[in-house]
Image (tube, rainbow, N blue to C red; front, side):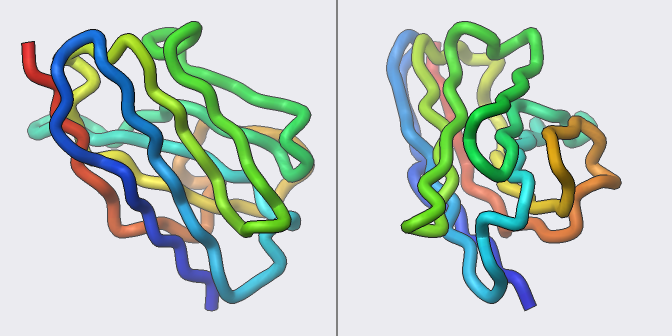
Length: 124
């Protein structure tokens, strides 16, 4: 059984920064592609970023490219999402996810395990 636990969400003013963490337990972390998704009230859950098993390949949604950075520390079984220049439209519940594969993917269906989510609220 794989468990994912996010942390680091909170309330921040527009232009500020937050760093989300996702700790994975239960299986070998380095086997998994790791992703971040978000869901705002009344909207579909959408892809934000992903990183491959080694950390050498990353992918970002256009809406966050240049502002967010995804990374991982396989020794610590942890994935990170550094979020800078936050905007009110970034407000959402952020979820980390893990899936088996060699590269990154954007489809929710490719991820087998999900965290419980952490709230990020950006005030204007």
